[in-house]
Length: 257
Image (cartoon, rainbow, N blue to C red; front, side):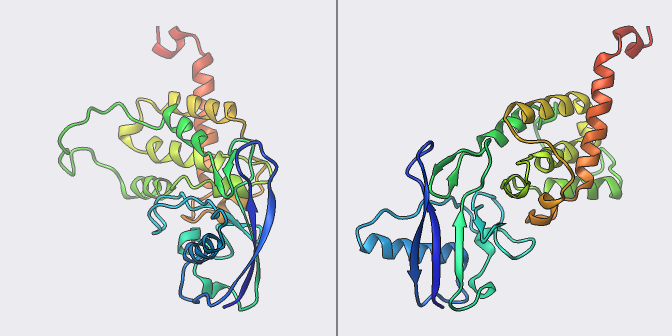
């Protein structure tokens, strides 16, 4: 395959970036998108240039670090697929590809296609945990969890924190990510002690990081490589509103005193 690549280049955060055009040839249709970028970087290095910086780790669609925008689509044109699992057979010989980083105030570009997603880590730190004591694994049926609840928790826990939802949202909202992290603990019995605090604190941290608000465009769910549903946002909103009401109630009313 022969391709024309327009790749975003930016030396460091705060610098003015621009697209740089490269032509690559003899790209196998069976190679992944990141393997194609590896070929590009080898050619750039042979010419004495600086290779394109991009994030990657597992290259198995698990870690979520590989995110980039391809022709205006977060992770590229194939649904339910991370960039590292996107294969070149999805494109045609002679195609022109525009490759750029996530675009969001809360995801500052560090270099080229690499962005700082530390904001997601801080949202998790604000409440994405439970207070159950660690130790040896409990018996499988010690705490009974119904199948419906287990399915809801597992579906939400599939979120890999890649940030595609933020990149696709016209408001750069992190609602889908935050909702997934709140939901997968909030529906389980083990997650109930912190349920109210979790919703309050994680939403507050999300807002503090500078993410935009949700206006129900639905683009986040469309590009999510793990198929996280918009229902998680509705569930988070219910938890958050309930938690805020409880927080404003007098202590006597909450304790029955």
